[in-house]
Length: 82
Image 1 (cartoon, rainbow, N blue to C red):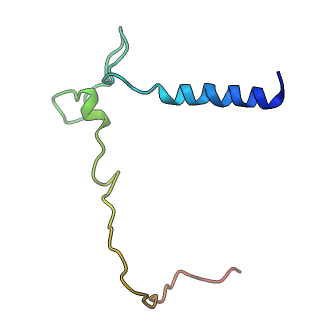
Image 2 (image 1 turned 135 degrees about the vertical axis):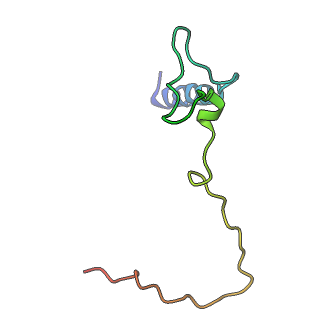
C-alpha cells in the first residue's frame, strides 16, 4: 500500500468516525448514578439540566453591522511592545 493510499484510508476512517454522532439522550451508564444534588438544592437535576448552559457561559452575540467606516476610539490598553 502506498503512502497516498494509506493517507486516503486514514482520512476515510476519520470521516466515518466523525459522522457517527449522538443518537440518543445522554444517560448514566448502568450501575452508575448522576452526581449528588448541589448544596442547597432539594432535587437532583437530570442529565438535560446538567448539560444546559447558563447565559453567562454562552452569552448571545451582538450582530451590530457597520454601515460605513468609522474612526476607532483610542484604546488605552493597546500598548507598544516593550
